[in-house]
Image (cartoon, rainbow, N blue to C red; front, side, top):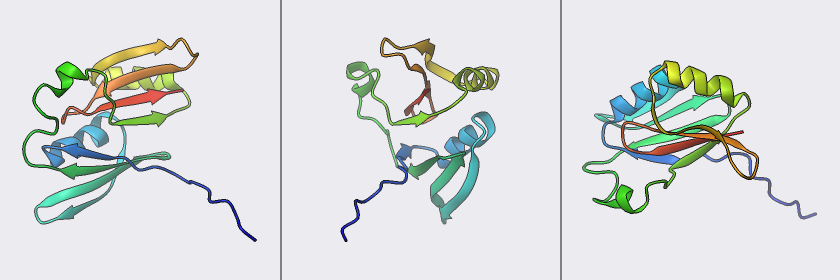
Length: 127
């Protein structure tokens, strides 16, 4: 019997110039839990909140090529699906996140917001 494969989860890998700053942002500001940090010195970490898991990978130098954000201002690094997006947006606002796009209702009906992490990654949250 051939069973159809089932995709269980996705774990985007975000490239960051300062791993410790990225971990602090996701844990202290966004309420994620640090699952592990690897390397000596550390170069890889994983953070999780509920079913959302993000892998953080240190990279030397700029994460994005010079001029990339000028050309692709809204290019996302990850999207997190959420229930209770209005409460989450209020919590993130109170935590002082850097907004790329505040909470809004999209023309297709979803509510979304986008924030910027310390490495310049844009993370969308959608309900």
